[in-house]
Image 1: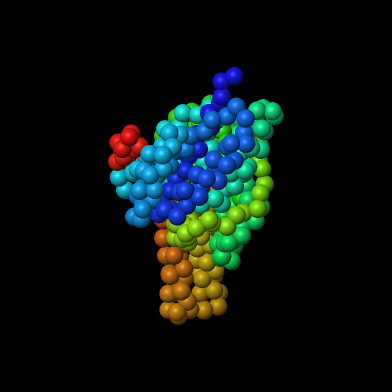
Image 2: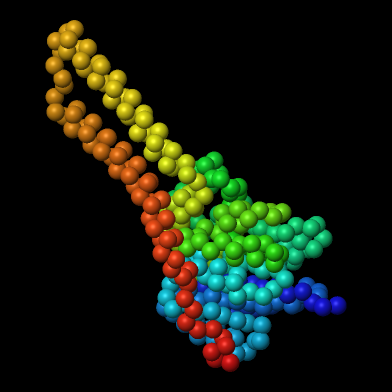
Length: 314
């Protein structure tokens, strides 16, 4: 019987201490799966440490290890897209190299696809161990907001870690957007998906590369990419304040004509001006964000640029 191939895509940036432990953990798990071969595609996303050296060393030792090294940092989304494009497996999974995605879950994912007929089995975290209080708070708010306004299903706690059939991977690769939010793209393409819950794991080594600024920008990417509700909010605020202004004008005219009451002094006027200016800038910023994304898409720049692969050293 011909063995089926599972491709494992692993985005990496400054993860020199995790390359070998990740490979050993995955290899140990995959050896327990019968009639299955596997390959790993490490994607070096502009690392400044010895991550690439570790990939080269491992690729020289193991024939099923491949890597792509970008010419600079293009971001995790670009790294995932590059890995999916390079993967040759009948099934493809995306995993974090820090072992926060437990390799043992691949066994359950594979069985669910083979025995239950799913196209995709995805992992979602039911806890956020290791996250700061603020990160937990804002992550919870983000999922609640995007679940209500998104045009596709957004599952709270969803990870990029999932095992997909080849036909689902091919569908994702057909979407060649420059501004990518993969969690939304996975939902957009559809296909039958089963969710597996698990407790969030601590990093094996190193520190997270997603600080608050990057997480906030990523959240905006998801909202802008899969919802036009912010534009409706801006339009609603414009109509609302036009109505409030109209009522205020009538009240001021009435008070002046009936009671001879003069208009209040400049402090209240200044406060109102600042408030309305803030609302205008907020709405302009919303529209500007959508225009910026459209501008970047029209440039048709490459999502990533590969500088080196394992074929260059073998």
